Length: 271
Length: 110
Image (cartoon, rainbow over all chains, first blue to last red; front, side, top):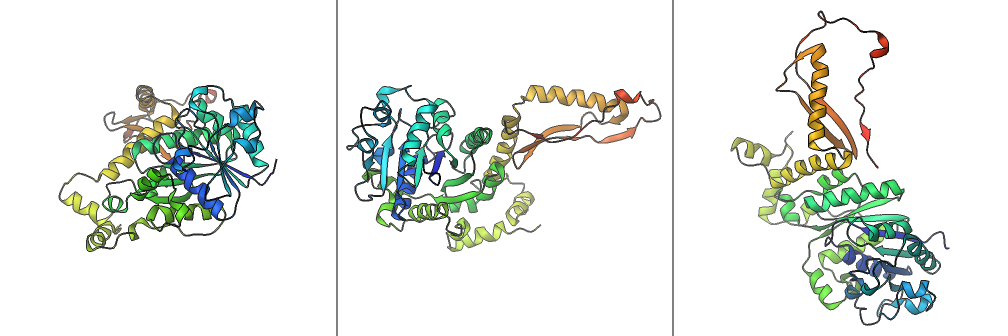
C-alpha cells in the first residue's frame, strides 16, 4: 500500500448538503492538477456520483465483484471521458444492500491506494452502517455543511464520531454560502459555523445556480475551467488540499452595490 | 455589538434570525454533546441550589445553571446571586466529608 496516498472521507451527516457535488468537483480539480485520483461512491444504496460525473452508462462492475474476484480492479474502475487522471469506483449497486462491511471497505481502499495519489470517498448520509463502513477506511475527512441549523447540528454529531475514531485532520467546507443573506444577518456567518464546530476551514462554496446546470449535463463545473463562483471555490479547495496557500474568499466582499455597502456599515463593530 | 444590533435594540425590533440560529444551535449542541436531557439538568440544578443554600442564602428565583460550549468543550456554569452568607450559623464538618466542589469542564468527545 502506497503510504503517501491520501484517503479522504467526504461526509456531512445530513443529506443534500453537497457531498457528492464536492466529491465530483474535487476529483476533477485534483486530476487536472496532475494527481491520479479515484472517487469511491460508498453510498451504493442511493448512488449518484456516476450521474454527476456523466458516467452512469459506463458502469459494468462494482467493488463487490472485485472483492469476490469476479473481475479485476481495472475492469471495475470507470475512467472519466475527458479527464484521464480520474476514475470512479462504485462500491455496489442498490440491489445488493447489506453486503458491505468495514473490512470490505478497507480492502477496496487498500487496492485503490496502490494506484492513486488521492482516494476520495463519497460517504452516505446518516451516522449508521453506511457511514461507519466508509469511516473505517479513511485517514482524513472533510465535513461538508450548510449555514443552516439542521446541517450544522448533524455535522457536529459526525465530528464527534470521527474524533472517537481518531480520524484526523478533519477540515470543514461550508457550502451554499449566500453573501447577501450573511450581510443581512439572515444566515449563520462563516465565523458562527467555524466557532461552533471548532474545525479549520478548508474553504467555502458560494451558492451558484450553475451547479444545477452542470448536474443536468453530468459535467462538473470544474471540468470546463468555468469561471462561475462555485467553480472558483471548488478549484481553490482542491489547491488548498494539495498544500497550496490560497486565501479564503471574504463573502462580505463578494457584493459591492450601494445596498451592500450600507449593510456592511450596519455590521461595523461599535464595541 | 454591531451598529445594526444597536439600532434594533433602540427600535425594540426582533433580533436577527442568524443570531437566533446561533443561540439555538449552541443550546442544542451543548445538550447533544453531553447527552443530558432538560429534565436531568433541571434536577441537577435543583440539587445544586439545595446544597449551596445550606451555606449561603441565595435567590432561588434568580439562580441559573446552564451548559455552555466553547471549542467543543462543554462547561456547567452556575450563576447564583448570593444574598448573604450563613457562615456564622453553620459549623465546619469533619474534613473527610468536605470534598471540594469542582467546577471543571467536561470533555465530551465520546
